[in-house]
Image (cartoon, rainbow, N blue to C red; front, side):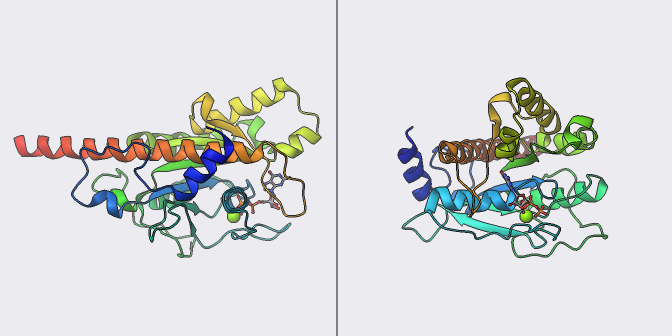
Length: 274
Ligand SMILES: Nc1nc2c(ncn2[C@@H]2O[C@H](COP(=O)(O)OP(=O)(O)OP(=O)(O)O)[C@@H](O)[C@H]2O)c(=O)[nH]1
Ligand SMILES: [Mg+2]
């Protein structure tokens, strides 16, 4: 699809429009479901900047999300940004900007699960140091409240990538996402800095491999991007890349919703027959 085509599609996008057919949806469920795209990653990986990049690419507008200034803390309040659904009173999808982590451990796992399950929503502060009550299995949750697809952000120039420290912490979360049939797209940011450093194709290949080890994404769902920044040149070709990421994420989210509905139905049938 040409750039303009995707752009106008996404502007007026409504949840359900890609897959179209949700045979196992509960009555009225799809009317209440808006795709939630969860943005996760370590602090400074470019999640909030990505919200601004999408805003720029889709609506030609400037900054909505608060981006870190050097040394300052970034996002502390969860924020959901509505996109799509032009001309209707229902948004097409939400980008859910989360608070990043310095280290990945039990606390990060608990917080991310709570967000995935819809127990933590936009507008809520994240208070750290106390576990959040949430389901470990993700079953019996309300599909319309959950996060349906994950964009995992990795700063391309992060030295921790190469050391492999970060990969080992993701096994738990990968398993949880798999259980929930939620796909992860890997977004490698700071492509401009990689290019400035004269990063070779082989090095890029290695970075992509290392990032994929963290997330378990498919090769074709790993992207390099330069986020839009007000004072900097936004490379041509980036816009198309960003729109492609969103379209791929929405497609994955809709398939997840459909699959979860079918699983739920099968589970109910099983329970009845026992
Ligand atoms: N050069 C360059 N800088 C970027 C890019 N993406 C983000 N940045 C910068 O990196 C810093 C961190 O970006 P944020 O978007 O605030 O990162 P975040 O993931 O939201 O961070 P937390 O909210 O703390 O989790 C900011 O100074 C951004 O301007 C990029 O692609 N290239
Ligand atoms: Mg942020």
